[in-house]
Image 1: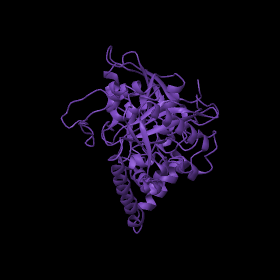
Image 2: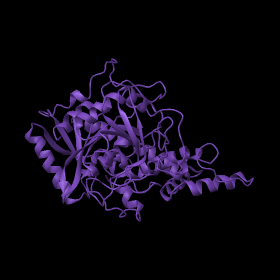
Image 3: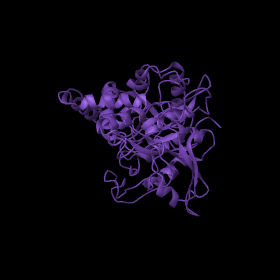
Image 4: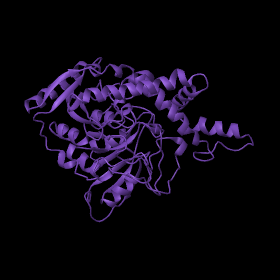
Length: 425
């Protein structure tokens, strides 16, 4: 077993029967589980035990799944390697000595190591797709609003979605079938079908891509590792042999997506993480009569360096005099990204790119250069800005290291993505 896959190992039995009866599931440790601690990978919440289940956890139990533990993650979902966790780094079972990706690295590693049949993660800017690619498993980032976020500890509310991991596209789709759908506790959720009828995602995993039109955004190939690109093109040629057609398209807006994403995500993080003050939530900073000093001590001791960095940058971007200069411009860029994707997806069925432009980093390689880590998300963050669904599916290997292929579709177009991805399974 790879190191540090779970922060807490705990068996939570589900119903006696259901579509997931007999299947084991790992839960990312920012998803609330009643009476089982939920740390978000942070010393701030080391002893926090929620009194309620997240909606997705309730649905898993009702479907008969057995939860086997809370999976390791980058602290509060902030990172792409699972190395910012206060509970230690997770090794990559598919590439020992390398990172499993992040921030849902423990969830992907649990599936890759066979410690769980399925897993749940959350994806704010690629945090399901990155570890899926690095660990050689399947990961789905659903359309914003398809899956309830009730019980997900917030990092950046307008960007994040809970989604599934599995060894196969069909199994990931079967897990999506269980967790998808409206929730009265989350006003951002909606019925994916206009008529309210639900059809199975798992049944879409037919592998039939005859006549499928694939767009390849040239901007998402720039700067990618040569071995990653070779594996990506080989996978597309395999799809072409099955009847699909692909051609290059342009998404000029994505060149500004990383900057816009980090301004928005860090601004929302600054606001969301204000609640962790040692009084409402989080470990206390002691008491000496000065609330400001107690508050400061709790946050200084409870948060790691990456979380502090993002809170500071987000607070700066929202501060008087800088809101219009940074946050408003980032939101304008977000609107441009959405329009760009809508335009191109009117012309093709799905978009395809390498999930990550590089193979898994060696453990410790990116910690000294946060900017390198941020730029590695260039292919995944635009999807979150546009509120669209995406899937990462194994495409092959380069130098013995896993490479993922990402498909992106129109809003609530999960079935088409599952159909396309299952042809590579």
